[in-house]
Image (cartoon, rainbow, N blue to C red; front, side):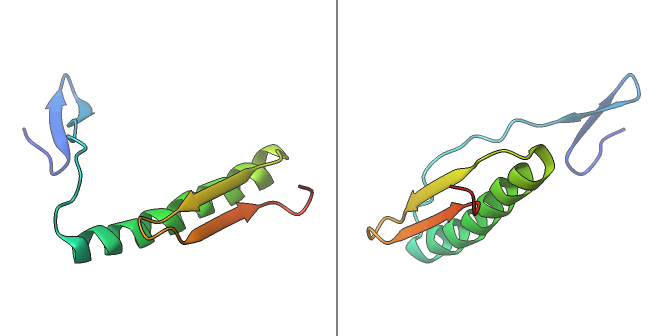
Length: 74
C-alpha cells in the first residue's frame, strides 16, 4: 500500500528522499526562502524555550538583506 509521502514497508511509513537543488524560478525561490526563513526562526525560538538554550540565527538573502533571531539572553 502506498501513502502520500512515502511507502508502507512492514507496516511502517517510510519517507521518500527529496533531492535538494536550487529553485530556478526567482519568484518561487523568494516565496520558498520567506517560508523557510520563518520556519527556521520558529524552530530556533522553540529550541531556545524548550531546552533553555542560547540560540542565535543569522540569515542573509540572495540580495544581501540581513535577517536575525537571538533569544533575549544573547
